[in-house]
Amino acid sequence: MAKAKSAPDVWMIGSITLILAIGLVMVYSASAVLAFHEFGDPYYYVKRQSLFALLGVAAMFVTMNTHYSMWKKWSKPGLIICFVLLVIVLIPGIGVVRGGARSWLGISSFGIQPSEFMKLAMVIFLAKMLSEKQQAVTLFAKGLLPPLGILGLAFGIIMMQPDLGSGAVMVGASLIVIYTAGARLAHLGSLAMIGVLGLVGLIIAAPYRMLRITAFLDPWGDPLGAGYQIIQSLYAIGPGGLVGLGLGMSRQKFNYLPEPQTDFIFSIVAEELGFIGGAAIILLFAILVWRGMRAAIAAPDTFGSLLAVGIVGIVAVQVFINIGVVIGMLPVTGITLPLVSYGGSSLTLLLTALGILLNISRYSR
Image (cartoon, rainbow, N blue to C red; front, side, top):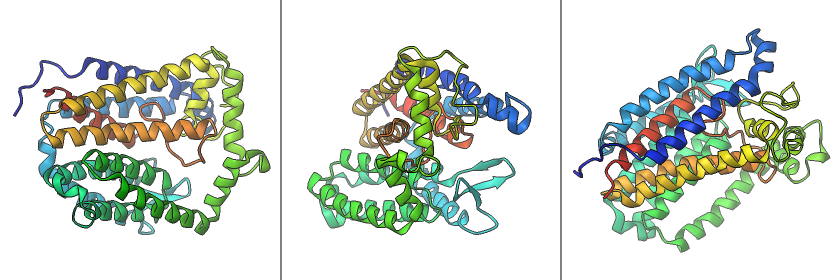
């Protein structure tokens, strides 16, 4: 076991702290009007976000000081538990429907989303599996198909909810781990073509997904229906200009832009803080990804390296999709902005995962 540094990566801790702090401020700014209208308390969402942030920071402190190799022995049980939860959430009367997807377990306003746990469980499992069979990953049948089969099964169950956004993040991060482990581009490219055909089939099979695609291509074709969210998002971003309208001065949060505190919080950031504010958040995420990849490269073993890549992949893919949707470059998927958007269990879980990444940074070669 490599000797740990006296402290984890300072740049990484700094970027996480700043993003989280900006997120708390923006959750309040984006949600105050909605919270007052729904609950009579403008602080409703930010108080809950602060509670989960505190829980997440506590969990991050624990995982940051727990050697990452511990997750090896829990990788298989953790994956099995997540599969069980994914199946349970599909049972009517147990799984809670929110946003059109039966993807939640919980009581009243408190709940967890098993697909969020599956994202982390999958990258931990793949990191262990591929680190132990790294030579075989270049072989299609023996090395590549087994991890892809497990990944495909998880994606299929998630799509039964349906939750394309979470499934896409899990698949994207997992493929980054598989490629980093040494999988051949020719194999992945061939499977990607099959995956595209499957995705087309999923879109055709569900009319609401087809509406999202047509709204993405021409949102003004249905401005009060499928194109409403992206149009209102662009109406928020446009007036923001270089420096924004000022913190708290958003117009779109007055019941024009749906979900201003979750999926479209970056729109409010751009409206109130302008291009400079939006670019600052993207820069902080870039620093987090850079330092995370640096920790992966310098990790003392293959498991640590692949695990770091997977955690960084979860963050990077989710940021890419969320901002892509907000600025109209991708169809609406229901993906939140990590550490910034309002979210309970997802925020706590992500901070827990980032604690693992910070622990890996402590054992750099």
